[in-house]
Structures are given as C-alpha cells and as structure tokens.
Amino acid sequence: MTTPDRGPIVLDTDVFSADLSDTALIALYEPIIVGRPAFVSFQTVAELRYGALRRGWGDARLRKLDAKIAAVEVVHSGDELVATYARLRADWVQIGHALGQREHDADRWIAATALRLGIPLVSHDRVFENTPEL
Image (cartoon, rainbow, N blue to C red; front, side):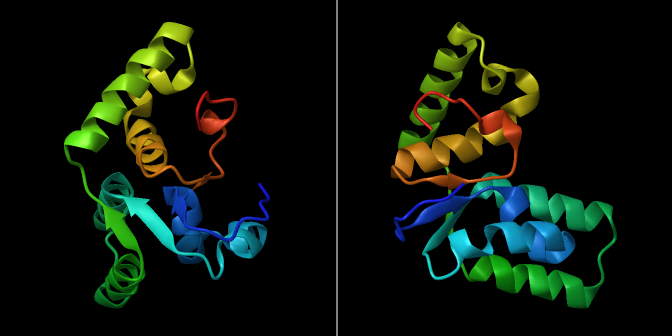
C-alpha cells in the first residue's frame, strides 16, 4: 500500500504491533506510517492485551506495549461508530464479502473505525482487499 498523502491513518493490529513481533512487516510499512498521526481502534488494543496475557508477557514487555498504545490515539466505541459498524456489516453480508462473516467481527470494528474517521486503513490482512468503501 502506498499513498502520497501524509495525513492521519488507522493502523490495523498486525501493522501496529509489527515491531513487537514481526520485523519483516516493519520494513514493509515503515515508509507509510512514520511521521503520520496514527489512530487505532479499541479492538486493536483489546487484541494486543489479550495476546500479551495469553502469551504470559513479562513486565518489561507489557510496559513497552503500554507505551506504544499511549503514543497513538485510541478510538473508542460510541453511537456513531456503532452505527457505522452495523451499517457496514449489513452491507457486507448483503454482497457476500468476507467482512460480513461472524469470524471477522474484530476486523469489522477496525474497518468501521477507519471509515467513521474517513481516513485510510493500513493493514497487512487480506480480508480488507476489495472492500467497498474502504
């Protein structure tokens, strides 16, 4: 994904957390994300905290995660985001897009965040490919 726009972006969990686990993704997405205001969905924060708990991260690694989350704007749910999410799911179910499926609930929240803010989503997840409106 390339873009000449250097405006704000929403980071999907995979890209946001790349420096915690995947050095190949860092190199791929660094030119796109460095120097741009970044937002993450509350869903991304939940996924990261769950993953850290499940993997039994120690205090030092948890502090690194907390600092990383503190450095971006976390978008929490509210009436407008919930309405966007519901409309998108209905639309995607109707057209048969994968994001309408139950197992992509987390991905829908992240996509709805980007669409609600009207800014690009940066992700390495193929489920977002060929997504109307996104």
